[in-house]
Structure formats: C-alpha cells, structure tokens
Image 1: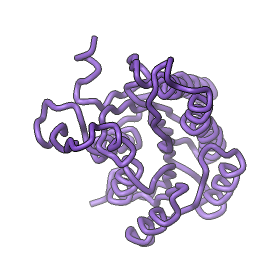
Image 2 (image 1 turned 45 degrees about the vertical axis):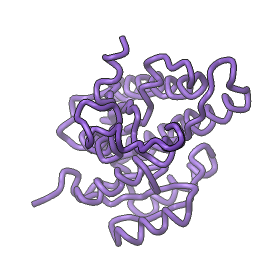
Image 3 (image 1 turned 90 degrees about the horizontal axis):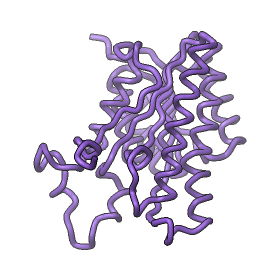
Length: 253
C-alpha cells in the first residue's frame, strides 16, 4: 500500500531533533524522499544514516541567504523539484518586554522569522517550476496569543503568521498551485522546551499521554498535523493557522 506522500520530495529545516526529527521520520514512513537540514551535523547525519536511502542531510544555517541558495541548488540538482517544504528551524528565548534585550529580539527575528522568509522564497522558486507544492511554516501559540514572558519570541512567531498568509495569497493569485499554511503548537516535549520547566519537575507529568486533557503534546502529534498539510487530503486548506495545543488557546480566552 502506497504511503500518503509516496514519491514526493520534501525538505525539513531543523530536522535533526524535536518536531523536525518526528516530521522527517513521518515523511519517510509515508513514502517521501526527505532532505533534512540542521546546524547539528552529528545528529543530522546520524538520522539520515538511520533512515537509509530515503533521507539525506545538508548542514544549513536556515537564517543564511547563502545557505538557502546552496540547499536550493542541491535539491534542484539531485531531484529536479521540491513538493513539500517544512520551515521548522527555530529557537526559544524567554523574556518579558522589560527583561528581553535588543540582542534577544534580533537573534529571535533572525533565526525564527528571517529563516522562514528565506525558506518561502526558495520554496516558491522551486515549486512554481515543478507544478506546485505545500509549504508548512512552524509558528507557535505564542504568535497568536499574548505571552507576557515571551515577548520577543511571540513577535517572531507572529511574523510567521503574517508571512504565511501573504505567501498563500500571492501563490493563489499567481496560480502557482502552491499552498502555504502555518502550524501553532504549544508545550511540545522537545529538547528546546525542556529547560522551561521548573528544576526537578518531570515534564512527562504534563503530557497528553499522562492525561488527555493535559497541555503538553509530543513531537509526533505536531508531525501528524504537518503530514496532513503536506498531503493531498488537505488540498483545499490554504493560508490557515492550525493550532496543535490540546485546547490551550481556547482555555485562555
């Protein structure tokens, strides 16, 4: 039985760990050929080796225009096209408007927002020449709901939402057959978020595995939503903000 994205060519940034890794694994399982990129060369190469011929690794700073040119050229040379792009690379820095520094702001904007802007530009250029595709940008609940302790981080993720809608509208008007959607997780159990829990507290206590009504989900839960937006079953879904947050957002309003 063919997989849900059998034969597709996918690119996942920040693919060596967390949500990126879970997405790469899901894509390979469902039949795609995956290019995963990351700054963590050791973890990226290990994952690609583990997955065999269905995945390859490229070292990339996703916030570098030169690196995007290099990755896009490599994808075009090896595969001739790109069907799915997941702009997942990002960092988390805590800080209210009083605590956050300008350096924090600029670093978050560079890594979280500039990377998605550059990724969308590269993705559109590749996809419009090969019949279309799906771009999935990983934002956050912090990008649509105010978080007093994540001011700069929330702003960087909000930028992704606005960019996603603009890309979706542009590609629709241009008739490129490219969809662009954003996903907004909250409380995912990843290495990046582990440090946000109080010392001595086991984060597993707060996962939906422990209690379906808990707040925290697992990387595989987000990867499942990404897979939905990548496949043809979501062909009528374009320009949306998909929340994967165990209902956290609706409980806060």
